[in-house]
Image (cartoon, rainbow, N blue to C red):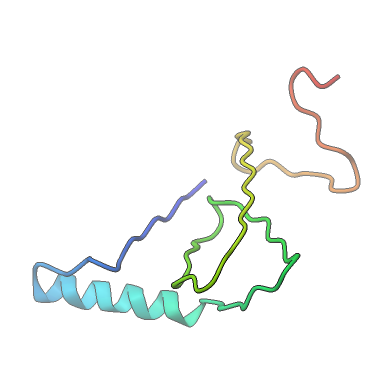
Length: 91
């Protein structure tokens, strides 16, 4: 399983090669970024290990509910989505 984290807003390359690499990374991230305008009752569920996420400036009021879950599956695990997932102790 691979994880990518990038807080690039204050990052800068210390050499010209590093600056070029950082610029290439920013360009690559922008090319696959999705910007969505949220509306009341919108819901998003995602895996922190499978996507990068962030947000722009929040204007106005907001109500944010978060729910975190954690369970690690070995790499290469195949799930039958038609069957419920059972965790240890759920028998």
